[in-house]
Image: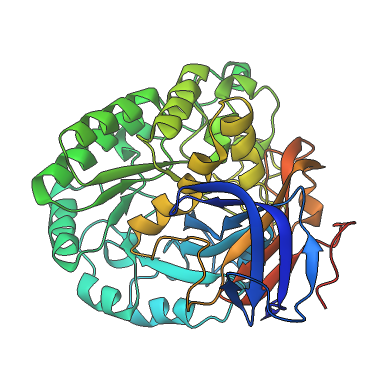
Length: 434
């Protein structure tokens, strides 16, 4: 969409600002693309009762498949999907074709002109091969906000140690897809899934993740490098992270909506849309993740939006590639898991999508106070529910495990850095903004 945001004032909105600790009724005033304390003379005013304004959401883990897989996604379709989900900033992963291991590839994303602000990550190792550390200083100078070989783990301890020492000197975090390749072997599913026994599918034991997580945490303690653990899925990983945080090590972790809401025990049908890496854990794993997000051990939520071209995920579980999409249902699915069933406050929930991820990648804390910066926020109707219909998504892919499910909370509007990037066409009571 990407057009200038109109000037308007919404009265009686619920304002959620984790930076200010604000959860209160008030105004949302936008003037010339910036937040204002009060409406200007002649500014259109509307009743915003029933609406909640949040700072723009930040997702530190998305795959836009650009370059390399345009049928699955590119940076423009992925950004449109992000805007529909309430996101204003996203961190793209470097497992593209070719991999994002050179400054030109980083700069191409920074300069994209998309609906969301793209913050590129870059490869830890040259070509994501895990054998030689990439030129991290050059990648950082080009605009990389993190280093990761996401999609695979740097299994060589010496290579990872060298990379983390360099990243620590640069002041940039390392993200890791912590799944030990030797333990994973050819596994594709957790043993608790009924489908695993029925089809005789190779199993991924939880130790595959836990062993890798412990290695990464130990290296963070040794090198002083900020280590971020991607898409945690096991209770053992949560406990290891808790211990590392008690030691004062510079570590963090993220949880995805699908790992917070779904479990391996629910995988009974031969549906490739439920295949992901790491796989869905057990019910006890899910409970450990929920507890960790609520108590702040896991201070970051992320989607791991992983699109695949149509036709690649409908061949059954065994033949499907790993990965599910999530940008357009992330807010709703995670709120159902954490706010609905978990009793988490909306203020703390919002912090997991804003303050936590922003701090990880060095963004100013997203808030709602008037300032000189262009406005970034999203309007949500938490009283409205919707049915997930992937065919209506802006994403070019449809591999969503929530298809057909009714979720709470509809994103009505997203504004990114002063630009209107999403306005829900199904918003029957929408004020006239033009």
